[in-house]
Length: 303
Ligand SMILES: Nc1ncnc2c1ncn2[C@@H]1O[C@H](COP(=O)(O)OP(=O)(O)OP(=O)(O)O)[C@@H](O)[C@H]1O
Ligand SMILES: [Mg+2]
Image (tube, rainbow, N blue to C red; front, side, top):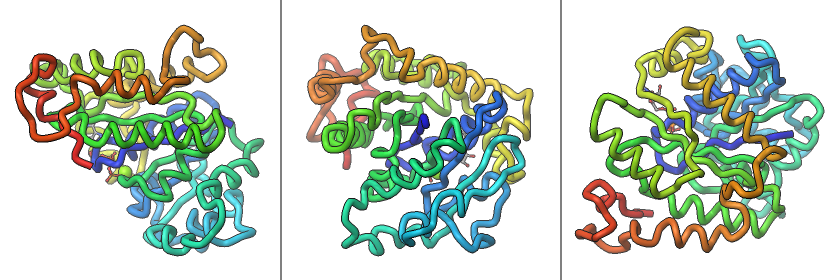
């Protein structure tokens, strides 16, 4: 089952919005989709109109109670073909609860294996942290989408995240995180600043960046309060069109059709990472640098 984790330890960059709306767009295209809410904030659960405290069993039980599977917690949503594995704040206790559990990084991989025939695709909304929940998602996923808010600190934390993807790929199986893609979010075509940051990110990350971008759009901010994906809340909006286009792009680049020549961080990840960050990486305080334009000069790794 193709499994797509939406990951970035940076808060508020559009992970949940992307997880909900790509999952909904895939379901709209007739795929059977499971959305996993792996963030104790339960924003995906709430964003699909469900009360996190209304469930007797959640993802927390799947990860911590032997014998509870995803099939026991998955619920239908208002979108045809889209199921949700909900969570609530209890999930925040997972790290502590699993402290002495062997192979705790593989719990989600195993849980997903059991439902592999029930769904075509799984989308995972990750928390803004690189801890055990995110590690479980990275290990279980074939694809990683990293939403990057087009703003001044766009690169912050990205190096650490991408290095972690590399470690996971080496340590677990080679299909883990096979496709890593950056998604530019909160894009504003009419401002020079947004265009400039966007161009710089494309220059740095090249083919890793989705061609589709997600524009800043008020419908995306409104939809969660209606408990719906933007695809049903405002089906003719620019935001819905953006997410449909992104989903089509994701489905086109399915692992089976990625061209070998199209280098999407396969193989020598470490080498590529150094190449990517060389020249843009400023380990100490920002200073002028021939290769570093003003915006990039402040995009310093802080974690
Ligand atoms: N393209 C957009 N245009 C306008 N508002 C957006 C856009 N994308 C997301 N938002 C809004 O911005 C806020 C943060 O988005 P979201 O919750 O998806 O980020 P996140 O990365 O999941 O945050 P967290 O790290 O807290 O989980 C939300 O209120 C959301 O509705
Ligand atoms: Mg979120």
